[in-house]
View 1 (tube, rainbow, N blue to C red):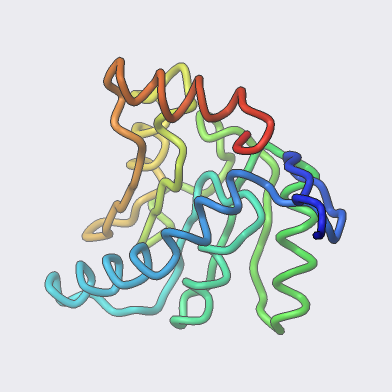
View 2 (view 1 turned 180 degrees about the vertical axis):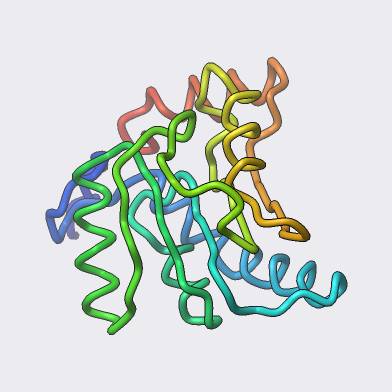
Length: 170
């Protein structure tokens, strides 16, 4: 019987899983289908410039690039961004990766037709600032998409505190 995979944040080890990456992979199809559907309903193209805030290992950024977007991916983790760069290169995708917090993404104003906040609002102490910065980066007529864990007491206890403290799910 094989051993369980090691769970660690931002590890490049081949036998290591990242809890955030597991969540990103689980929701990847839904995220891309929802985003495509919203853009279609609003009559917006699935192309142009897209900003992914909270990009982690870059799965969503790669998905959006695969749809035809020119993607800028922002994440505060240097190691996650390095893993994201390597994955994009392996996939033959050109994605600009920046290391910055969601509260200060250091991106141009009104430059993106799509801004996606990915698993960001539930972990920031200042969600208003994150939304303000996303709005600043959004071009006129652009689309803001986000997904987040509900910020109720129960969700915080279960999804944020409990699961992130257990070795197998953190």
